[in-house]
Amino acid sequence: MAKYFEIVDPLYPILNRHEVYIEYEHFWSLSVDEKCRYEPDVIALHLVLYAFATQYLKLLDPTESMQTAEFYCRCCCQFAMLISLTR
Image (cartoon, rainbow, N blue to C red):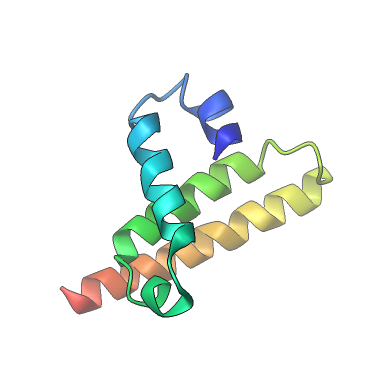
């Protein structure tokens, strides 16, 4: 999350950092059962943020970084499909 707000948010300031962090902390404080029933659109947003941020992590080599970002994007697409099916 921090990497997203450090690198992407200054270019495209579309999210409220404080609200995103509150939602993020709340999600990770939930039990596994509660996480499974959580709003899929919020989880999809998290996955998009992870995908953006992963591209800029220095801990990974560039190929691994892109593969991880693509994984998060695919997960986000699956959540988007879930959202459309449940509404």
